[in-house]
Image (cartoon, rainbow, N blue to C red; front, side):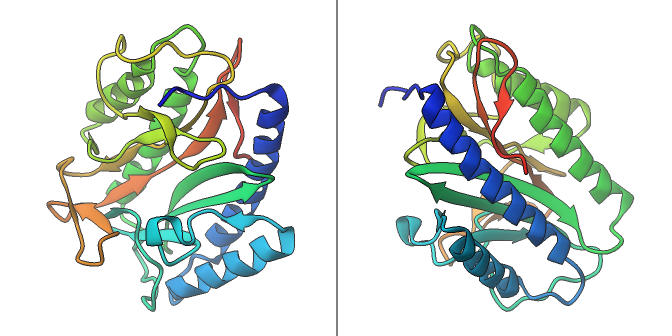
Length: 249
């Protein structure tokens, strides 16, 4: 499929979608503490999105049963919020998307529950920095591979690994558009980035192996070796200058 170039007007709408999703994600983060049940976050999203008049993009997508993905400890992405309560020392990845006036915005964050180990803190810090390094590499005229190369080079220098089987993506009227945005690879790979491209950049970083496995629920993806994983994501627009982050409050 060709990469869809967005107009300035369409990107402005996506900025509004991004503002909604970032503000609600911030609310969810403030609710993460020991004893809170995952399903409570899903219910909060349903109420808040309804109040704002935006659509929960994830709900019903290819049959996904919730408004938000909650992935804990060795779970990388796509965890379904259920009746599990957060425990002191967990790390929790929250991935959220909304649709506003026909356009999607998508972002994710990983946070600790109460006091977490120094190594878990470092994993979270490195993953967030990897996201920003990928964003800074997303400049018109560069190849798409510059993003993944910036992420992989930094993450592996820190002693962690980047997931291969799941990647970032273009985003617009659909949650998943071309191109795919890997978090690894050479810098001279892929299409040339152009003004008007909108990408969801989302490094998924594991403390151990980059290999993954999927739970019998068909959704939850976790590390193959049981090591911790962290995930950060922003939706960004390519411009003639610096990339613009659309998923900020």
